[in-house]
Image (cartoon, rainbow, N blue to C red; front, side, top):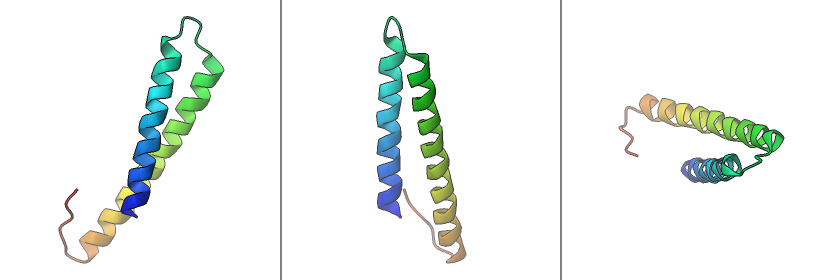
Length: 67
């Protein structure tokens, strides 16, 4: 699960960069920005979901999880 979280965070960072680049263009494509932002939000929600599951499982074992 850790690898999946890392992969999702990397994809999120890539989308951040794409959004930043597009928004700096003189005539930014608002539709493209909307699509990129929705994708980024879905990734963020997936990351949060996996983190909750991960920490819930580790708390159930009584262990401490380090990042």
